[in-house]
Image (cartoon, rainbow, N blue to C red; front, side, top):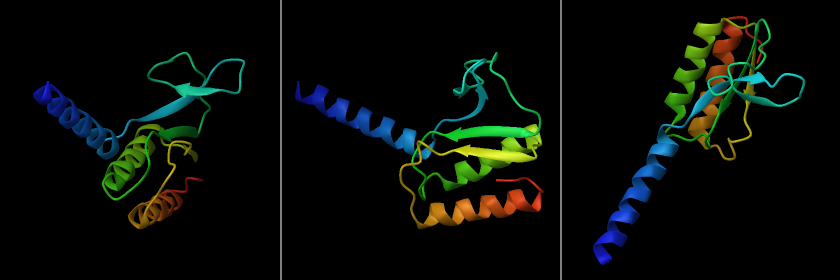
Length: 117
């Protein structure tokens, strides 16, 4: 039993680290005839708006995942070429100094591409 508890603790720790370091991020679309937005990958019938990308980062933003955040924003902007980028930040409940710097860098990068943030 002790071995099973130990394995459970290790597996839980690995899963938590994976979730925080490699968080899920998705482009959102509006559920038809509503004000709700959901992941396009799950609900491809959702509505999208020309020139506008709504994107959600599903994790607190901190030093271990800021590069994932920056790379993901860059990838979304390259793929969709929006005029306006909307960040759904409801899951970003905490940020540290590295995250603040990364967020400022993303805003500067978007502005340089004439994308409204």
